[in-house]
Length: 387
Image (tube, rainbow, N blue to C red; front, side, top):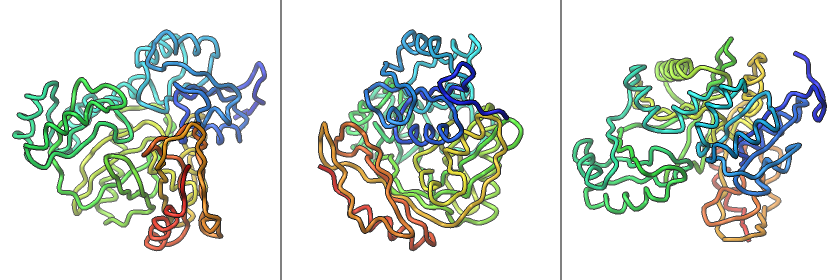
């Protein structure tokens, strides 16, 4: 493959639709390969804006606004990095000859929990939890009776746990209904999922370039309110379950097609594996790969997008811990104790221009055996403050 310099008439351009901390790492990897990076987000000075050649602020749910920038910039690859994007704009861009990653239909299926659940369970035949889709409070109550308690309620379109809750008894449904309105996306329809009595859940990072598919070591993770707080790699699991997880991941990613990395979320119960969700982009739990692999999930994503070989080495066990803001600020400062920086640990600060309580502002990364790394990550993340 030939690599040109950015800002030239023959430059290879990538456009990030979404410029948060994950997009920032993608942009950094793109810079290392001499790609020209255009970063788009709904607010100014988003993390990837800091490391892109050009940055734009636009309502990404506005079809014409997105298309105007696409037509003006003429990127070689469009990389959606969040769910809240006008899918009509992606379909139109693809129709006009632009290369959407992995493809517009895959984004359409995965950005909506209804689309991907129906596709996975009813078209591909993957094992999932029982589920019902609802549009009213009355339907929500009826769905709870059907799937049983506890049950998980999620907006069909949201991200990072926004709008998600667990109802443990019928009396919890009113609160879940109110929480669903906080969705970062579309809360007009909800999915009610029967609670799978799983032992643990994993992310199976799966990269494909239309010539080969590779899997990262399974990533275990801990969530609070539907959002990741700790992750570790590898998750110890039986070879039978690991093989099933890879088979499911390949089935769903082959079904979606295209290039790039996919974060396939799975529930594990003994040797049984249940499909949960999939994101056609780097996954937040996969930030641990910044310390465990020769090629992080972000580097693998770029390799897959460009059609390059996907070989990489797993260096060793590690863990990550997300730091979330405690304060509201328009000029946030992340105060990191210097003890975090040693031979086996460090921190990545996302440099977000504003903070609010619960917003992810940094990540601690530790290289050690899983048990030691996770224990240390839990300790070190307490040595960060914001103001």
